[in-house]
Length: 338
Image: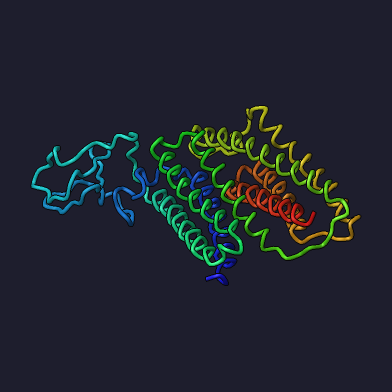
């Protein structure tokens, strides 16, 4: 199992990033309530494909927890039973978490795939923990950190439930995203400990300081981005997903701060790159960071000037998450080298 530790670590990190991307697609398409209950979807392990599957049926075998829609409200079966020729209210209870009762098959399956990826990521982190047990004597930090990742994934699943139960309250969505970044932080920390390079750095303290500043600025940028995203979501709904050119016609001041803040982040990294150049070595991960920053700026321009093309928002978000992960990885490597 010891030889499987690093593959499971990389797999966990890849799947967590896929979940972040899937979550961005869910939000872009307005599919967050595609499955109005949790962890099942309309009471099913595999969600329904048609609205007719959620209608009450006579002489039909229902299972405890199964969901139907009656008079635009969700009803949940209180036990296993076979329905009679007429609807009997006592066999059902109202779903009391929220009053959302709309079935959209596209939204349902987008949300279901998001949850499926989350489950796969959870399994990967569990296997990561199991594989880390083989090195508990030689590297207990890896085992403890892997255990914290598994706990974090469990907590993240519970946060997902609270998001659905709240009918997508914005602040809960932001907490959900913050938790995902915290999990990324733990995973890249574990990955950085697998880095074998020991090249000395002439400007070690400056590198550490720049890395910390860069991460802080990126987190501030992501925070402002969530606020801008919420405003855009509200505009999308008010315009019924049309007239995208009008969504930012009356943008709040935070949008302009968010847009200009990217220049500061770019300048910090240019100076960071200059120090690497003087050190006669530019690590591959730093080249990736520069590329991600460039793509992040390009996707921001793409959204603003081309009226939010499909997939532009999820790509913008996943690039921000990748930037945070790469910066954190480099900081951990620098601290080990110094």
